[in-house]
Amino acid sequence: MSAIDTLLADARSGLDRVGPQKARELQEAGALLVDIRPFANREAEGEIPGSVVVERIHLEWRLAPDSEWKLPSVTSDTTVVVLCNEGYSSSLAAADLQRLGLSRATDLEGGFRAWAAAGLPVETGGSPAVP
Image (tube, rainbow, N blue to C red):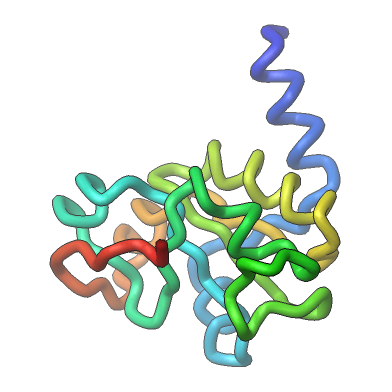
């Protein structure tokens, strides 16, 4: 097993990963869906309506519950579902968020592409990320 495979397996071992339908149910119940994909991917493939775009480079600062730069709605009790293209970098990101105090952070299995393939709503274009 490669080092990245081990890192990914370790990250996922602490996550209760969700599929597209469960992610939508969580979003409808108030969970925060966080899209960490780069602008080029969002522009080419679209976005999940109601998701918050926080590119990976800013993620920990915007979602750590005790960060002075966090999004106003984030608390240690916030349910967060992180998504990337296919569900790999989102697993690493969600594990990082758990280490920062978001115990209810997880990720979307299969990422944005699984959401779109499931026929769930997608908006075209690419929104700017939260700075």
